[in-house]
Length: 115
Image (cartoon, rainbow, N blue to C red; front, side, top):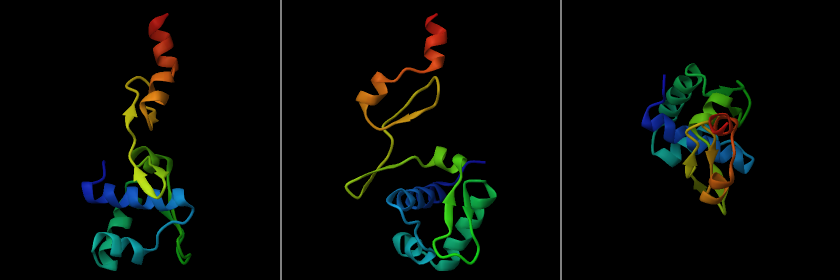
């Protein structure tokens, strides 16, 4: 089951924090989205049930992305700005950040069709 648009926004916010080296706290998520701490907890529970996040109870900043979560929220940090992916290969579903890397990419699926 895919995340809702709001859950996807929260997931991307968490991914950006993890990519910077420090997952966000519940309070930081609540402040960024203008919601209560209970609403954040509710969203995180649903994201965990969908298999997109893992948390370590009792640990500050204990939020981790699963590999499935990374599929929904691939981000790259460019000078503090979260940059969404620009291209996705239709053959192998890899995500790319920029036309140059996308055009230079070769995947096994393309090679199979060319042969």
